[in-house]
Length: 318
Image (cartoon, rainbow, N blue to C red; front, side):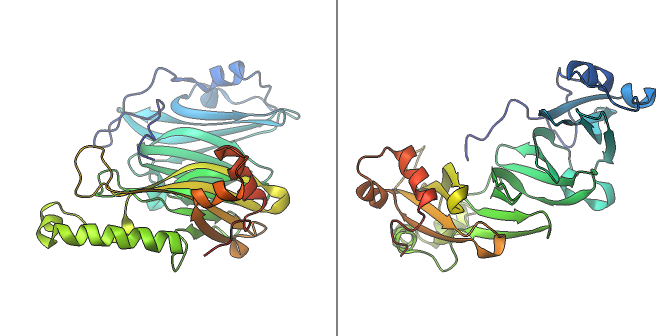
């Protein structure tokens, strides 16, 4: 989480941007991607210069999303989709912050484009801890958006995503949700509602340490003081679609009241989930990584994670 910085980030200062060297005309995009749009794109579209964008290219189609600039600012987000088989194409331009859409407020380089049979996703990067992901239908109409970035794009087109965070917050804590593009609705699956035994034990230790710091320390440091929001970050993810299972790693840390990068306490856990057929049926549990190591002593960490996705309840949820 804390290292989530991409070279594709725009340089943003009070809404001003510096165009990257990848700025080029849409005509150049079409040529470089070996596209043959039918009917031909009109000259006024071909001549638009775009940058700070990304694309997705498959045997089926090509999709590009990037920005045109006006007076040094992001002005219009252009999305171009071309069917490689038929040449059929669609284009749509979204003005920055159209109708109050906060997803585009202040701009944001497009750093990832993904496609599925019915949807296109565009991740727009804001800072090292924050992105907004737009979900478009295949006709390029908006299907919804969420404040975060995709970790797993499931075969049924549900999207598992990590929430964005305030970059300068006193703690950073991982939250994971599933977005249903048909219902245009998100459901949080982590942290697990009601807590788990491994999490409750860690929170108890955090609370004891934070209580010893005293209220004045939290007031002076503008700290929320909520031990439930201790530092945590997500690691690798794994999906086993045959089992409709998902698993991912989470690291617990407690940096509050410490100096430098020293953590007062650390724990490693594995979150395993089943019921991925629908967002409403997903259930997750959380266990210490050491419990999974004891259950699967002959596997390395990556193999254990895959096994947790294939058999989410192999280590009993507590």
